[in-house]
Length: 119
Image 1 (cartoon, one colour):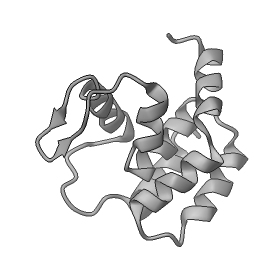
Image 2 (tube, helix red, strand yellow):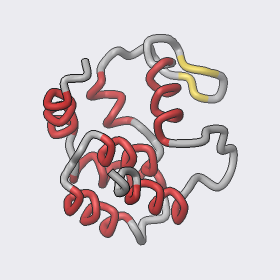
Image 3 (tube, helix red, strand yellow):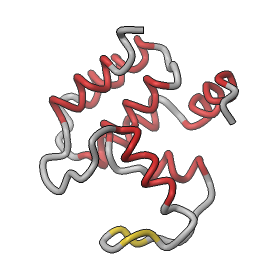
Image 4 (cartoon, one colour):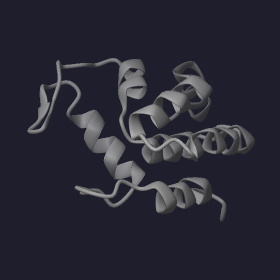
């Protein structure tokens, strides 16, 4: 259990959001993001209301939070490491998240969540 978040914490410390960081961890960021999806968002982050988990995952803008999610739900460690290697030299967070969602698609996320039986 000591390895939990090791990949996410390492990635976050090397590639974290540099400015306007209000959250303390990936869990907090994803939780707050999801809470505001059914409404119009918050100031500075407006959007149409959304209740699709697939859309939330595919449109999320911070790679460190997606890495945290994939790790916590038990996506294969080698798959996560491979994905991190692919985004290491990509400077734009949106481009990084597009690579993550292509390499680790929502269907895999949903499958892992189903196996966890937490919902």
